[in-house]
Image (cartoon, rainbow over the protein chains, first blue to last red):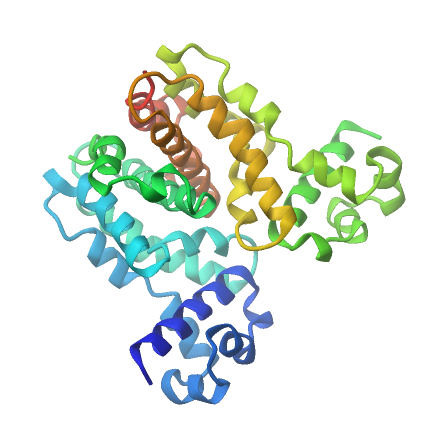
Length: 177
Length: 177
């Protein structure tokens, strides 16, 4: 399978699991969305459960977002989010917002998000209120993704990434110490 | 109808129109979610189209969020969002994030959001890059709502509102001048 095919399958799976209850998701639907056959998905990803495991994993995203020293973390996070979106047409973390509501699998996705992303940021913080501050860092990050998703062709979608970082990173950086 | 009934219907309608394509939404489904009869909805709101009109309207939310001078707007916005959520169990703006994707009605909701919310904030700004800055103010706002929605019992959900404002408002306030 090509890298493009693999990417298309994972993107379709993220969308399906994020927007529908687990029980309603079908490999056939994901395959149709990705433009491949369901049997190709089974061959390469081993079925619905293991595909869900891949989608619920935020560890790569967390590693990417945290790959900077604290003194530059706000700026790094903004540039990483913006550049990822422009290169891949998707958001690193936003699917957790679509996993609200009841359902064990949605809950699992939110718990993994908390363990892999929120806690990793909290571990970088010192001083008072680290849990609140880590969650507010994540709030800033989710918000940037949400705004760029709502307005795909708006001013932020086309602005220079360094300008976006100049304007948006200070709010994040002020929470990191 | 009681205020509670009216609130329950509008909340169920917001959820339905935000999470499903317009054609898939039924008054029966909204009624069931709200714990009332479909005929009661028709009597008080006049059917699906006018109910959608109510849901797609962000003007009250914009007015509430902008009811402060620029020098205090960042703090006002944070406190308004947090207090609204604690009193009503819902978010003032977040439904626009669930209205992504194709469909004329979702597009209409996003356009109204832009006209009623993003532009109203932009009109308060002077200097360079007002359109980008207004959208980034909205990004901060959507992010706070998203984080509190994803983690309904987390540290931010229970923290003192003034502490949340101390920590989160500076990022918003830095964009307002």
